Each structure stands twice: as structure tokens, then as C-alpha cells.
Length: 583
Ligand code: ARG
Image 1 (tube, helix red, strand yellow):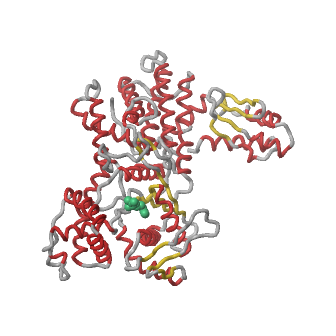
Image 2 (tube, helix red, strand yellow; image 1 turned 30 degrees about the horizontal axis):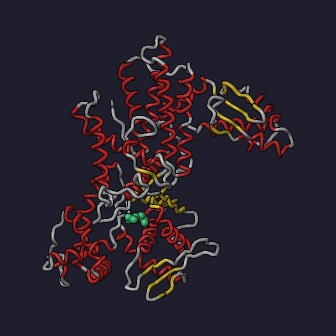
Image 3 (cartoon, helix red, strand yellow; image 1 turned 120 degrees about the vertical axis):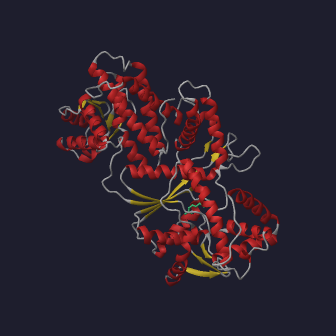
């Protein structure tokens, strides 16, 4: 199914050509004045300059040709030279039938599917997920689902932070608590010896303690750095302990992500890049890209026209350990080798932009990926509290993701407490789904690069641009269709302004998908879903769907309702939001 504005652009371009003008003038867009028309073409203005004619003269000639086309219910030109178009009811019905038959919920299929590696989530082993990780997970999952909905191949990799100082800190702390354990000795034998068994709760306590200690205790800090370094060089006891930390932490993370409805194909970590590092250093050296500086190896990536300072990349520290940049470069080699993707997208906090820009530049210089492989940063802003500062817990600490989710679920549960529609047994499950919908929609409605304020009351409101409003609309359609039972559902025609508006929303959903994909902007899907829901609500209030006496109308309206549900459900799915039956 082609996107409607593409179909119309072809039609209008052909008319420009037939009238003797350049067909490139026939670009059609959705009108922002629905009271005047559904679609608009402004090509006559550009034509006016090229052909030295008044724009309306051109618009008039093109309009005359378009008038013969039955896809339009109305085409007219208005001064100074706009061409305004509205589709005929028959054509809208035809397209809606095609959308329904395709079963893609209005998502178009791309003609050039690409292979995209998505790097999102980015949790750090041994640390608990905090609210900063929420956006990467929500946005990344949505972009993944969006790309897949259009037919792209997406490989999702969580890119665990499992190779950095946080592990050294935990090892150092454990070595003080369990000094007698074999894993801290030089003669640890992985075949025979075991390591202390850890739990999530232990890790949850040990890491913050160790991290705080390292800030005041220099000796301890040195110990942690040394442990990190020795782990990276393969010290047996530390490797075994690292495996134990990973075992506990990863199963907890998987649990957390599954609650969020976020899912990865690969659970590779920074540590998996380790085996590519010798090769990386070799390439950099042989191409003359790295040099020594104060015992470390660095690579310059500054360019002449840089407006801001672009520091060199540290590829190896003076103690020969790797850096965050090294693991990202090694990971690029791994991804190229394993997947040969057309693009790698990183969903990261805006503050990581400099880091990734350095990494990308060095990858290009070193030829780690072919020139045509795109490397993309999808940067996101901060989640703030009502004071405009990063969202914190009541006592000013970093908000843990699980606490946030609990808070939101509790709040939804309170709202459901006296619901007539949701049975007491279902309330817990509903509260979780509503909570997730509130959080995810509240996040995704903002352009990802912007900061936003976490406003629970607003997110949980059943009115306005919220996930709850959308779930509510779907649930309303569920009950309409349920009440209608097995009454016939078939699109015959359109009858009122309000059903036409719903039809237009359905027909233009494809446009939103294409735009959202082009800009990696799920907020475009949010806006479109909201627009569709508003149109449906108006239609619902202005008509008596089930009690409509005319059988053709009733069948059409039931089919229209069903199609709206399909389109909305698909869009919500792309946003990572599950619907509920009845609320
Ligand atoms: N673990 C990192 C953090 O918590 C995010 C990783 C982002 N991805 C990457 N390839 N660098 O900040």
C-alpha cells in the first residue's frame, strides 16, 4: 500500500506535466486546514517564477485536469495559487478496504528494507537501572518496532556496561568483605575453586557502598582501578567473580526489561568487544592513526572546521586498560563482522554525543565500516521533576527505575479502585498496563532530543495527549463492537463530516509512519494516534452507531470502528504500549 501523499503527488505531478509544466511541481502534502480541504499542493508558486506566469493561472490549468479524476470529491484552486483537494467518499472507502485487507494496521511497507543494528538500553552490570536508562529503553524499543513495522530488519543489542570500573569497585569491596576467598588469591583454579554466591540485594547494596567509599578513600579507589585492570587482563579469580556478578545482574536486568516490554536479540556487553581490541590497535597503528602520549595511546579526530573542541580519543590508558571508546570501537568491528549492517543506531543520552562523535570519526578514518554504512546517534534529553531539574526521589537520590514503576502502578491502582468496569481480580494487571502506557506515552510524545517534566497526574489523565486516553478509546471501540455482536460490518460509504474525518485519519496513518521513520521520531506516531482517537471520539459522540436504523450505515460504521481499532492498536504496539479490553 502506497502512502497517500505519494499517490496524490504522482497524480498531481502528471497533471502539471500534462499542462506543460515541470512535474516536480506536483508535491502534495496533508492540509493543515481540514475545514478547507484534506490535501494541498503549492507547486504553482515555484512554477510562477520559472514560467513567468501568475501562480493562480498555473493552479487553474492544473485543477482543470485534476477535476476529471474520480479520486477527488472536490478540487479547486484559490488565490494566490493553492490547489486544494479532497478525496471522494468512494475513493476513501476503497483505500480503507485495502488497508483492512493488508492487515498491517495502516503501516506502509518500504521498498528498500535495510539492516539496522539498534544499540539501546545500555544498562550497567552491578548497578541498578535508574530513570536515566528508561528513555533509552522506551525510545529504542519504539524505533525498533517502528522500523520492523515498515519491513526493515532490526537487530537489537543491549550493549551491557560490563567491563568498566563498576566491576572493579564491586571486586574491591568483596575482597574486603571476604578476604579469605580463593578468588582473591593468585592461585585460583577455575576448575576446582568457587566464588562467593551473590544476590541482587547484595549487589544493590555493595555497589553504592563501594562507589561512595572510592570517593573518599584513595587507597580503595586505587584498588578498584587495579582490579578493573587485572580483570581486563584475564586474572582467573576475578574473571570467575565477574561471571558471578554478571549471572546475578543480568537475570535481574532481563526481569526488569521484560516488565517494561522491552526485548533484545542480543545481550552482548562491552566485554565482548575485548577480543577485537588487539586488531583495532593494530589497524590504528598500521594506518598511522594512533600515537603515544604520556604513556597512553591516543588518536586525533579533530577536523579543521570543528566549531567546538574535539579532544583526541584515548584508545589505551597508560596502564594498558581499555576505555569506553575502545570498547565501542571494538564493538563496531564485531557488528560489522557478524551483521554487516546498513546502519548502526545508538540511543543514548545527549551528553554522550561527543563520545560517539569521536568514536564514529575514528571508525571512518580506520575504515572499520564501509563508507556507506550509516552511524547514527539518537540522542535524548533528561527526565525532569517539576522544578526543572533531573527527576529525583523524595530524599534527593537518583530515582531507581523499579521505584518509579511502582509509584506509577500504585497511582493507577488507586484510580481503578472504584472502577465499575474492571473486576477486582483484573485490577493489578490493568494498573500495570495503564502505568506503562502512561509512562511510555508521556515520554514518547516529546521529541526524543528534548527534556521533559515527569508529571504523573498529567500522564495518568484520561483526557488530552496521554496513553490512557488512547487506551480508553480502544476500550470504547471494544465495547461498541461487543454490543453490536454479530451485526454485519462492512464499509459501504461515508455519510457525515465526522466519519470522513475518521477515514482521513486512517488513510494518512501511513504518512505518519514514514515521517517517524525518516526522523526516528516516535512522537509523530503519538500525534497521529491522538489525532485518530480525537476524530473517533467526535464521531462516536455525534452518531448513534449501534442504534443506527439504516443497515448500510450501521455496517459501515462498525467496520470503520473496527479499522480504527486496528490502526490504533498497531500504533500503540509500535510505541510499546499494550491495550486493555475494557476500562
Ligand atoms: N552503559 C552506558 C551508560 O549507562 C550506555 C551505553 C550506550 N551505548 C554505547 N554503545 N556506548 O551510560
